[in-house]
Length: 567
Image (tube, rainbow, N blue to C red; front, side):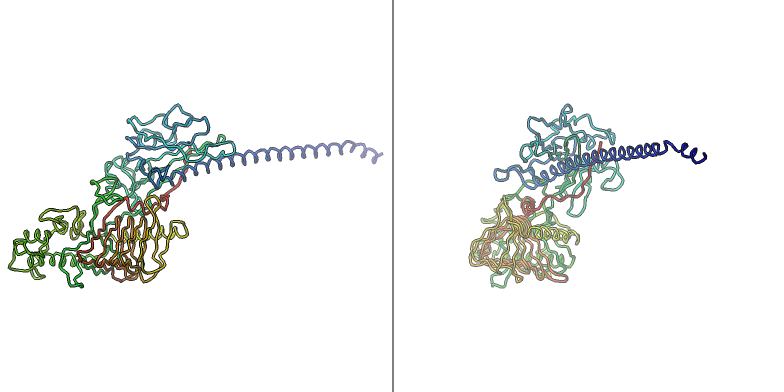
């Protein structure tokens, strides 16, 4: 009886256990279903975010690439000549590149538009609340530069990765806050431009000073907005032109220099040299620009980064002054009738009329005041000055013609140039000169397609036998560069590298370097600038920001930082 009662008491337990197990299985199934649905939604959201992220990046990269070059028939789509010049909120302070889908209207400057720029007010409005979307636009007339269209093909359902707009504007300290360039943010500095000196960001001293006035590049903010199936992303780049701003038209990076601006080895020394070194800014064609045009300022003709090299340059310039005055005293005789008395020498003699004595090292007062920037030195007729002079440009900080600069400045600029050259290896616009001489007419690159050219022979490069070499871009020459009875016409940068670093203009050397010439020696080595006084040649080294920027056009603008903004 006890056994039967126990069996009766256990009746239905199997059903209960089965129901509990089923409930557990249902719960597990429900949890797995919910988890799967949640994971699917998360993956979908992640996919949409990534689509929007890459679309936003596509806009940043397209615009960054287009900022390298101006819009011309040969390079449609360029933006370099359209970039905003005013600080955010002022006239011409924002440029939009829009990318509408078929039938879509994108107007970021219209508060009623679906794609209104809800972030720009934070760039200029001191009353804008951090983290809140903008609802207004600048009150200044013509604050927006005419919008440009994207270059990508029309959007379709098969091409959903598409940004809507990219805004370009100058960076100021207000844009940078709370990470202001000068450390603690101050109200007085918030609208000062942020500039790029090649290695770091520098704040302009006030709100009206442009980066060009400091011989630096402005930093631009690129803000890209994308909307992909409901996912929205606002990505930002800080970018600046990679191009350097050498401190002079002729630049020496060495501890020693052996300059010879008036070579007497050919027996015709003591003439006014036919080589001109000009630090005043010029355009791509070598024409002088008005002061401050295009954000380019005058530089000293010659710059060096070592005090000893500067002293040697100073001695060479004083020696040239002495030679010119001595020749004027010897041949002009106070009346300018001698056949050897050129109009330039006649002008010198008129300013230094002491015919009884010749200038010497023992009496420097008679020659050290000679102005080598005087256009009368190149006069073709008596006392009529042409457009150039042997040395002219901005005032330096040692001799008026020489500027001694920070060592790291010039070294970092050379490193930047070498990096651009290294990155270009293997590209269609990269060329190697296999031999040490060029004796036939040759052209490298063009205004629309600048080249990177490297002389491959370690002994250097010589242009000779009446050849004409024309080029646009960057030319790198190891050791020595000599032009002998030939013509060299280069628009851009010429870099003469170690071990020796000599630039030599012999008799009959004609042409120009419009941009900058940079010479570098190995540690403890000597750079040598040697120019002939032969009247059969005429060579000019002139400074041009346009030509320097052209040389760097092969490289995209430098990305200083990247960020995303959420509202």
